[in-house]
Image 1 (cartoon, rainbow, N blue to C red):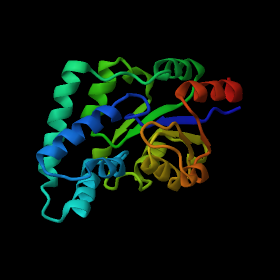
Image 2 (image 1 turned 30 degrees about the vertical axis):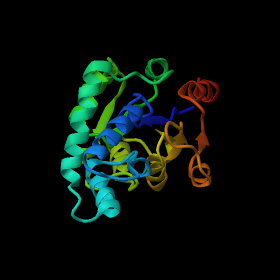
Image 3 (image 1 turned 120 degrees about the vertical axis):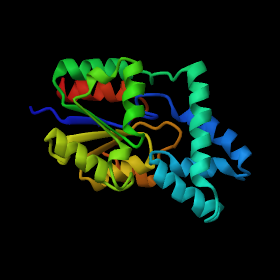
Length: 219
């Protein structure tokens, strides 16, 4: 049996970054007078800085200093990260080790910028498990558009229909589905919805549960 490709999102799937981003976002929002900021933050999960700026202006007005906000957000995030670090999601390291040993093609497609992706994965000694890594700054259109997953499949020389995309965000699931892949949702901050159940091949409570599924199906 030909093993499918596995293409992971990073934030909220491999690394437990989303809670830290949420904390940083709400701190930055206070400085910028951005009211009711948490629902706006949730709309940005799984997308790029550019798309985040569009969402900020849509909710707070065309003159909202979205770029400055994002710069402040990034500064706060990295200050907290330097002190606390970013945990690896439970089961991620074991899953990646097993997929490598088992011969799965493994990639990563993240909305985060390429240098940050490589730095954060490298810091946790996880970069070695990926055959291909793609950051959101190398793609013109961010998730929920299919571009990043289409590019990853093309560069990895795998058919989208034989590739799982492992995602935690609505935008990521939409992107993978539009690319013709098999989206798998492992929820983090965002609970599954009817739309996500429809677009996903399957929803797993954790990476450990997804790992067990792969071992049963392809081990």
